[in-house]
Length: 288
Ligand SMILES: NC(=O)c1ccc[n+]([C@@H]2O[C@H](COP(=O)([O-])OP(=O)(O)OC[C@H]3O[C@@H](n4cnc5c(N)ncnc54)[C@H](OP(=O)(O)O)[C@@H]3O)[C@@H](O)[C@H]2O)c1
Image (cartoon, rainbow, N blue to C red; front, side, top):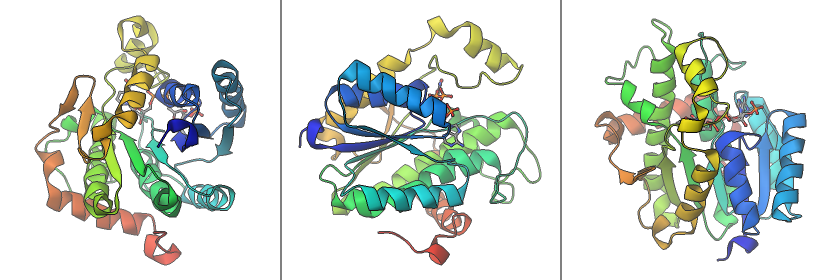
């Protein structure tokens, strides 16, 4: 199926990798749904992508992906507005310097970087089933390797909190989610993979005064550029083998093995079950 007949939803499309991926897909003629948090930034991205791609099929949806009510609302709106979804790119994410809880009482890295992917995908599953491509790409990170051992009694940083560890944990969960989605939905024709994009010159981590913020603010030109990642995402999604090699971990070099911990299927299953509880998915219904 050609991209010009596809509908693609990209989260965090107002800047960085999400913006670049949306631009690359829009230039190929896909109908783009940009899911953004900030209305002004979202509208600016929509205008810039429409102008550069000369593609009139660019829509904007607004949601705070760290807030489950907001995710459920935007999910319902998408189900009422579109006949199908062919491609979902779960990308919106951040690193938070201090431990903060979301409105749902989850630690913010888990709420946004993990549950933002998990719950939104559930909300959009019926649309993805109706799509011909059935492709999901989850932005993860090599930072998942910072987690050597899973402390099941400290997943929300209740006992100890370190921002790099907690960010890494959320990115490990992205890999568990990818593995579980591929296992559960691969037989129905879904292609699900994860990408570590490299160190990319985006707005990521520019908040704060730490060393990482300094690096991202001042050494951007030595990093990978978001446009390169946008092109890699386009190539991944249009490669014939996307559906065949599902559940894989891509990096700028190609397919690689994630950490040993990330390959633990029993833990992946356990985190899936916990996420069902964190997202109150039984209570609100599973949309498959
Ligand atoms: N950059 C890197 O070096 C790097 C490396 C490895 C992995 N990654 C991953 O790549 C993904 C994209 O990051 P990026 O580098 O492109 O960073 P970015 O430029 O900061 O973009 C992050 C996007 O997420 C959105 N976002 C943040 N909080 C949100 C919320 N509560 N609800 C909805 N959207 C929200 C942001 O919206 P606003 O514009 O409103 O802030 C922005 O559009 C992340 O998942 C990150 O973990 C990045």
